[in-house]
Amino acid sequence: MQVKVPLKELNSRLERFRKRMDQSTHGWEITVVFSKINLYYFTGTMQEGVLFIPRNDEAVLWVRRSYERAVEESLFPLI
Image 1 (cartoon, rainbow, N blue to C red):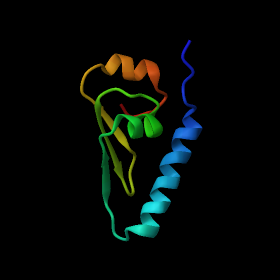
Image 2: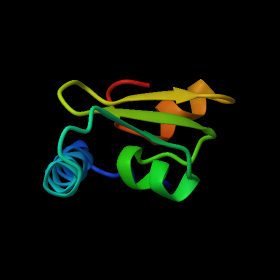
Image 3: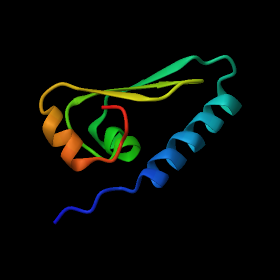
Image 4: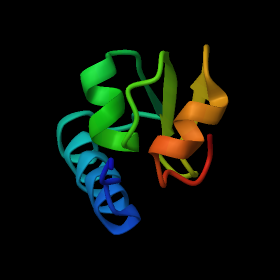
């Protein structure tokens, strides 16, 4: 049985990331994440894909291979 990363934790990670980006890179607009380890940290799935983290909007995960598996593994809302 696989334990999913709680949605509250995923949201907290994104919030902390955005705060750090605001402190270190003023005026940033979007970050794109490709690394499987970082994808897991922010979304709870290691499916091959790309995570878009906009400064002032919802983050979106685009999955390349198995959408169904990503949805099964993760509580991340926008896959």
